[in-house]
Length: 432
Image 1 (cartoon, rainbow, N blue to C red):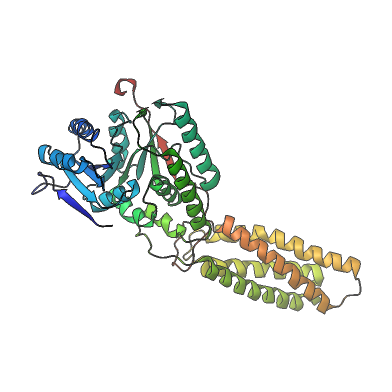
Image 2 (image 1 turned 135 degrees about the vertical axis):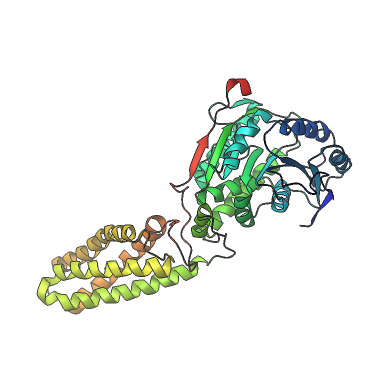
């Protein structure tokens, strides 16, 4: 989507880039825009950071563009970005992507959030303590004035997010957020939504990346003149949840490389579909099944059926885990190798129960069965154990593993990793 600056800020030539760029996305806001920008400008002038206000106009058809240009001409540190299509997510992605500031923020034009929360929002990002920061109307210490209908909808939406996408933040849609620019450059290319679901998608991906998300309880007074179509927004959000959930479960999103965002590595451009992962796992499963059968035949005379099965299964399991670690899930290096082998050996119990149980059942029901039948039974039991292992590998052993990877495969979507951190800052009473 093409965007163009309508008027560059007067103070940029010869000066250092701002520390903070606050984007105000607008569509037909001729009534609220001028007083809100003046109020925001006055507040930012009192903060200890060089700042800019970027008015991101989403194809307004009223007097909003004219007012925005006038504000940029009158006030220092104000610029205007004109987009040819609507969409809050589109406005934020475009404005943040074009900014040269260290910290990128946004707030709704109605300024429903008390601006006293702005400094606690951005300070952890400026200091490097956190990667993203969000205002929350649902956290302890928040003070909210809004109707019961919007309160119920907000809480229901966030409960839905917890149940479907396992999101850990308390309020995904509060129009008051900030992100470090270096994080935004790597995370934004992966966000597909251009509307109201943009916030939620950004936060879900940030949690999957193990980024630090700082929460600030805010004072919020709902705008009675809000133009948001609740029904249309709710339907769009449900479609967004379904699409993002599908992307996560089908591994379209490179979750293993998202984790690299927390370590400063560049974001990937592509990820391999799950089909290739499944094929490699199947091939390794066939090879390990053959290995198990060969070892069983070699050891049966010395150890007996049960002993030979135990040793053969143990050796085949170690080989299977190592091969899947490298070839199926793309984990390279020694980091986590011992843990992966231990988890693989714990899964040995499942295979042992299936194979030993099948041999015991064969001996009880068909005591005269020969070695060929024993091997056939073991192959069938091993095949079932392989299916169980695949599910366990994807959902437990190599779930969004942070170890170094070569990009050959992607792990399963998982709940927010234990490494992610959510901090909450309460505002002092005199700042409210």
